[in-house]
Amino acid sequence: MKPTIYDVAEQAGVSIATVSKVVNRNGKISEQTRERITKIMADMGYFPNLVASALSSKKTYMIGLLLPDISNPYFAELARHIEDRAQELGYNIVICSTDNRMDKESEYLTFLQQKGVDGIMLSTGLANPQSLELLLERKLPIVLISREVPQTAVNTVIVDDYMGGYLATSHLLQLGHRDIAIIVESMDLASSRGRLKGYRSALQEYEIPYLEQWVTVSEFTIASGMEAAGRLMDGPGRPTALFACNDLLAIGTIQAARARGIAVPDQLSVVGFDNTFLATLIDPSLTTVGQPILELGRQAVDLLHKEMIGDGQAKQRIVLLPELVVRSSTASIPH
Image (cartoon, rainbow, N blue to C red; front, top):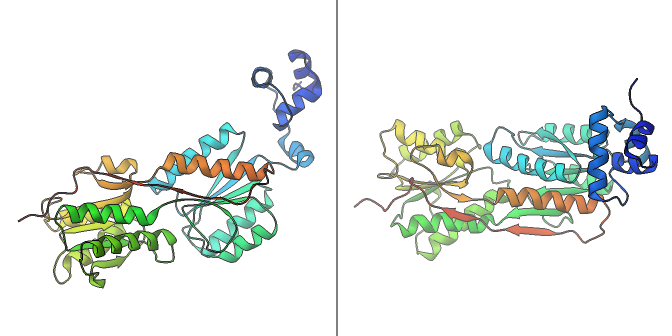
């Protein structure tokens, strides 16, 4: 016979109510007691009926996480840190890749609400802000990660994209570069607009004119980066440096340069953005703007958790600072 909650309580020498608190992750119980009862449940093969628990407590201990693409190393690393922190707090994560498509985002949001998730984390382009407004009307706890919706009261954790764009461009300017191109993702994204603004500010500080010919928009894949960088390299005049607004685009840029016999960094300096694990695998290793991905994920989960347990605090906007990580893909301009 399958063990019951009564068997667990008897084995642990506690009341059924105490075991129930452990199962439902509520009530005041010492961590030592909680761990002991959890171990006894595992040893006995007792698996509580989570559906019944959810019906009684109105909590599923599930969080929905919407990302553009889990295969993107930045979002994969972010998701892992979110999952680790959520697990520490007793929650499971349901990950959905939207490809920044309005229809997929809407479908996933409907699906997650049907599953009764306790909260939702959004790190997509938010192609459909109306969906966000609907979630807020239903008082479903939400946190935005690396994305903002101006004039909307919602918990948000972002990185200072303006500062990141400024750091990347200033580094290239300090190396003597003046013909500096930039590849950005969709300008519908606040992150893209912020990084471009930082790029422009750095140029202005050095009294370098901002030229539209050095700016191109791309999707966020390596292949798209290769195509976008190729257009810049094959156009009138060639940049001596290129700032790609994520590491995948930067890797695509290095590949496009290699295909044209352009040496990196001797003939073209390249800076990325994110500092994912790929930055150290590419040859030459990638100079990039590092995002505090671990802190980003943990802060977002903690904000959502506070709202889910009814902390009652006002909505927060947390801005984390990036840092420039200099490696081998940048060098002084050749003379």
